[in-house]
Structure formats: C-alpha cells, structure tokens
Image (cartoon, rainbow, N blue to C red; front, side):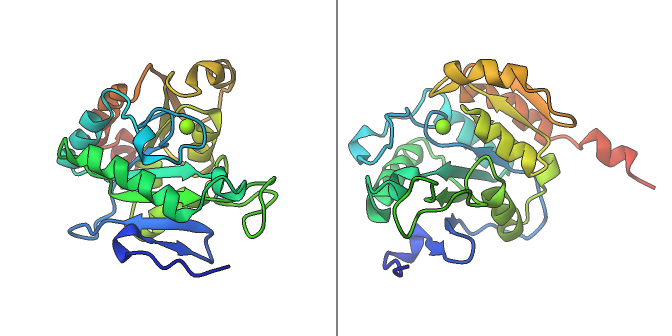
Length: 232
Ligand SMILES: [Mg+2]
C-alpha cells in the first residue's frame, strides 16, 4: 500500500486499522459520549459516490445540529464507507477535497467535526482496497471502535445517525445506546428494513432529518439512568 503524502491536518491512513482517520485535538481526556454521523445522505446530499467538492450540499439542519453538539461538548464523529475508492472511482486526494468542502461549509456556521473516519474497502474493490468483509466497513463496527479508543469515547452512551440500516447495525455492533434513522439519502428506501429490525438493548428513533438529533443531545447532556442504577 502506498504511503499517503498529504498535509497532517487532513489526517492519515492507518494501515493496521484500514481507516483514514482525522481527529481534532480536544481539551482534557475524560471519557464522554459522542454523536456518530454517517456523512452521505445524512450531513450532505448523497449524489452517489460523491467525489466532486462542488457537489457538496449540506442537508438543512446539519450544520446547526453539529454546532449544537460542539457547543454542548459532545464530540461529533463522522464514520463513512467510501467504496468509491475501492471501485477506483476516485482516490484519497479527491475524497479529501470533498471533505474539505464539507468542513468549509460547516465552518461558515461555526461548526466543526471532531473526528472523520473513512473506510475504503469493498468486496468488489480493486487492489489494494479489495476485502470480502473488512472489519471497519459498516455494518461492522471497526470505525466506531477505533474512534472510541483514540478519542476516549463511551460507546454505550453514544448515538449514531444514519440513512441506511448498515449505519444502525454498525452502531448496534459497537454497543452504542441507540440510533436515529433519517429519511434523507437512502433513508426512505431503507425505512422498512429499519422498522422490521427489532434489536435488543438498542434504541431506535425514526426521524426525518439530522435536525432531529437535537433530541439526542438533550439525552447526552443528562446522566444516563443506567449510570445511577450502577452506582454501588
Ligand atoms: Mg449514507
């Protein structure tokens, strides 16, 4: 695999994890809950293998909810499957120009992402990005585990917002508290599968857009009832 020569601010590809990881510095090392967000179809319009920065269009309410999380001290972590890389549609530099465009649009509202993690692998991918079932590719939980370890996050208190069942499954497989399913992106087509899925110990909220994640932030600002029950 070739080393990526890009500005450090863009993060880097972690060979052992198989994930592009960019993490913003955070004051303190206390473990806290995070808001995990799928990107395409949740934060930005899903144009299908988004690779042109001029196609980056924020979904209404996305910047506001990310800003609200920033202000509440809840780390916002994007976890995104980028099979377009495996399929040879675009490379990392192009993928990162899209990410930069998103960062600029968020910055215009004063919002920022604490973490950006991307998995390039796909079972129909080209070398070196072929993998039959990479542990970091959603619905598998590798990106969430990596973020939790590197960012000191409490997975069981965290939520994920996704438009696909695979986003929710990744959250479930990582032991998150729950998920908000939205109707943007592939959400409408995926909603029946989400409704039919009835996992134990995982809260599913059915919403319309990421704007409804405001309710999740309210939950995260309070002490989780389980914490009280678990006190000796
Ligand atoms: Mg999506």
